[in-house]
Image (cartoon, rainbow, N blue to C red):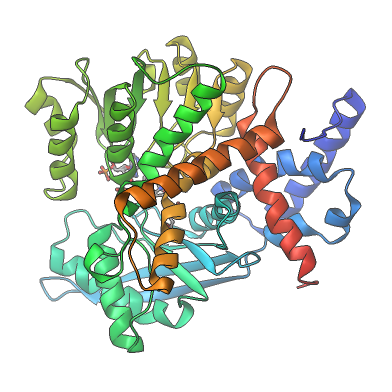
Length: 459
Ligand code: NDP
Ligand code: 2IT
């Protein structure tokens, strides 16, 4: 099925005007929320032309409704550090849409967290979750808490204080949070413990839990593995494979680590990793042993990626991103807006042919334009990193069934879900000679949520 966009210059002018009007209204209603504007514009660019000849979507104001979150909760998180000082942070939960299932999405602890960033993430999550085919709505939460330099007990006390307010807004059939930047298995454990203490119920209210208390096998690996599978399907679609390809990965946290593992498994060679201090370039490739060392560095010792360069005699570039290193494929897995226009130009110059986004919204609009003009295949985050939330959905299923599936069963489901996401992108994004994965993901993600909203009456 083609997206059915009218391509005449007059139709394109109309689409441009509709987009401008829509964005002006959105920006007026949401001043100072740059990341939210960016995420909405990326979706509206594809969805407005798609609904141009579908008056029901317009009359029922579906896109307007989806860009106004169902609700936003903000709250004070007050806790004591190890020296007995009282600390105050701001917590959030943004419930964007529960049209197709309970709100679902991660929790981010990072000093940069604000309402704009969480609104963009909750909005994106709504379409991503729709693409998985599982019954999950979209939400996101977090706090401007910086876990860096905090002791384990401080992190625990912060999680307990955060959940002391959050618990009244979530539940296994209302809103099911998980991890994101700064929130991994340890934090999910502390959050779960506090929820259970407050509610007195043992239920699947969070995903990414430890295997011993209701977690799913492969959840930790799922986002990074899914990114690898998506790239594999994109390459297969054009008759190629990852075998022998030189790959750039940014970030060195959960998503980056398991992306490297899967790329290695599929025959690619990863030569970079990064963090907030800079990036390392290891021409010899980051093999399984080096990756195990990185997992310990980041997951246990909470150190800087600069240490990798010393340990393995690799090059280290302080304060820089890896995109100027020549490559075949790139996997941004750190954070939003980490590929700027200049980075995109460097990627094109360096020979990059395809990108699968592990991080949420890692490419700026300028960068996307450069990449698309150069014909680089670009799987956007809402498609490429959906494996994480997909296995979260499978964790919810297993909790409801009160049973656990094997690694093989979960991985098989994950591969099937990523393949179906790929195929939906092709269905809605196939152009003459190339798949526009951005449009495919935006339109496919939108249609299901929009139809559910329409069926449920005006609200
Ligand atoms: P982690 O906290 O495990 O790792 C984050 C990584 O990104 C670290 O290497 C961190 O560096 C780096 N980073 C974070 N913020 C910045 C910044 N402002 N500038 C430069 N580097 C930065 O998080 P995840 O791996 O879980 O998340 C990475 C991305 O993937 C995020 O965009 C997240 O939203 C997305 N994602 C995560 C999913 C999941 O299941 N965890 C699912 C889908 C998407 P440092 O170590 O120095 O802090
Ligand atoms: O951005 C994301 O998809 C996540 N952080 C995972 C969300 C989830 O509920 O597993």
